[in-house]
Image (cartoon, rainbow, N blue to C red; front, side, top):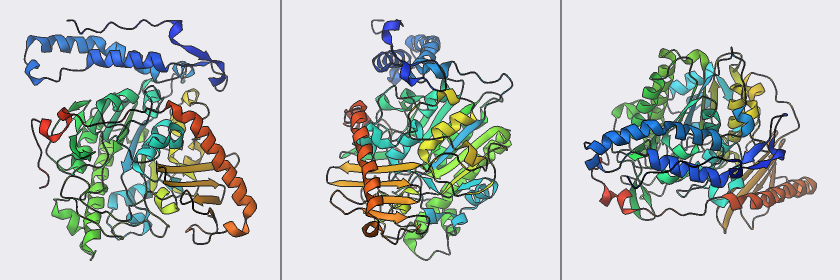
Length: 551
C-alpha cells in the first residue's frame, strides 16, 4: 500500500502561543493553521472510502473498512486540535449538567411577509404553531444573501471579516480551513454534529462540511439547485454535488422532502443523554420553483396570481417539512431538552429572470415573494433584505415564549448556543456576535447599544453597505451614492431619509463604516484565494446515473 499516510507528529513546534487570546481567565489559546491543514489532509486522505465502485466488492474493501475504523481517532484528534481553542478543550461542565440539543432550521429566500403569523396569505400552519409556542424574534438580522449568512452563523462574525468573497453568494471557498465554527466547537466538547441540506461555503469536497466540524453531512454543496435533479450550473457547467458524507450520490425526490427525511432519520437515531447539533439548511423557497404535489397548490387556491401561488406552494411544502421535523423531535423524546431555531437566510428576492438554474426555471415577476411592509429585497441592505422571520423554541427557563423586539444578528447564534451549552470558555474572543441568552429567557440584553454592519460586495462597481447603532441606521446603497440615514424606532419602513438634517450622526456612522473596512482589509488576507473550476467527474457527462428533472 504505497498510498498509506503516515500520521503527523504532534509537538510544541507545531503551535504558536498567543497569550492575548485567553478569555475569562482561561489559559492561552493557540494559532495552528499550517499544522491543522496538514493534519486534516492526512486524516481525510487515510479515511475517505474508495471512490471506485469496482473496489467495493473486492478484498481491498474489507481492508478499507478496517482502516476507516482504526482512523476514527485521528479524525477526532483533528477536530479537537483544529476545531477548538485550548481554553475550550479544558471547559468543564458540572457533572450533573445535561447540555441541550440544538436544531437550526434555515429557510432560503423566505420573505418577511410570507409567513402566516406575519399576516401572509400563504398557508404556514406549522410555522404559525411554532411561533405560538416559542419566542418570536421580530428584529432578527441576517445578511443580504445566502453565503454570507452561513458564514456569520458558523463563525459568529460579520462575513466581511473574511474578504469580499464571503459577502455575497459564492460557490468558491470562503472560509480558511481551521476556522473555528459553531459545529467544530460543539463537536470538540462531545456534541454529535450534522449538516443536512445546502452548504454553499465551497462547492467541492475539499471545502465541504467535514472540514468545518460536521461529523455527518448530506445534501448539496452548491447554492440553488434543481428541485428534482439536484444539479447546479457553475461557470456554464451542470454540476452535481448531492452527497452523503462527501460521497456523491444520486437520489429520486424533491429536495425539500429528501432534506426533511434525512433530518428526521438522523434525529430518530440519536441516543438520550448524548448531546447533538443538527443544522438543516433547506433550499426552499429559493428558485427554481418546481412543485409536483397538487396538495401544496390546493392549500393556496385562494391566491389568484399564478406566480405567487407557485411560490406559495413551495413555502407551504417547506412548512410541512418543518412540521415533520418538529414532530420527530417531539415523538422521539427529545423535545424537553432541545432548542429549535428557525429563520431565513435573507429576505425574499425581488424578481427572478429565469433560465439560470437547471430547468424548469421559469422567470418570476416582481411581487411573487414579499417582504412587505419592510422596504427592499434580497441583495439590498434595507430592512426587507436583512430582517427576517425568526423563532426560537426551547425548554424553560432557557426560552420564554412571547414576542421579542431586541435587535439580534445571526452572528449571535454561535455565542448564544455555546452559552446555553455551558461552554462560554469556548466563545472565541473578539467576535462580532454576542450571547443572546438573556433575551431568549425574556430579559433585556445588558450593555451599550450594539453596532451591526453589513457589506455586500460582489464586484468593485457594486457595493451596498449599512451600519446600525441603536435606532440609527446608515445606508450606503452604492459606491457613488449619497449616504442615507434612518431612525428605525420612529421609521421602521425606512421611508424618511434624515441624512441632510443630521450631518453629525452621518459623519459618526460613516467613520464607523470606514473603521470596519480597515479592520476587514487586515483580516481578508486569511481568506482562501482558490477558485472552483468544475471537473469532468463532477459534471453531467461524468455521472453514471441521472435523476429526473421534474415529476
